[in-house]
Length: 145
Image (cartoon, rainbow, N blue to C red):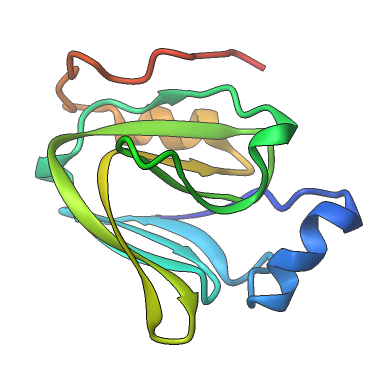
């Protein structure tokens, strides 16, 4: 099932996203039978096996964290397109992801927690969390909007 990402309504915040092909139809999360695909235009395109993911939770994302592909270089990696509807999903084992900077150039970063923003996070979480294991050290900064 496809869940579309929430795109920030502030034109100053969302303009840089549009420049990298992130729009209402090109920013989504596909929840399939055995995998999760997270796509944000040309900025982020990663596939995760469901067996490597723990339970997702709502996650607070202040405006000063910014939008786009984000990392804290300590394990948090995400494609955040809005400060609303943000979800964090812990990985059962650390995974290396590629973050593009300019064309084929980019960074390889360690991911322990995946973060993204959705238009309908509650429906996604209800479907995604069925049968998912809880992970110690999972999201700490949970918020209900």
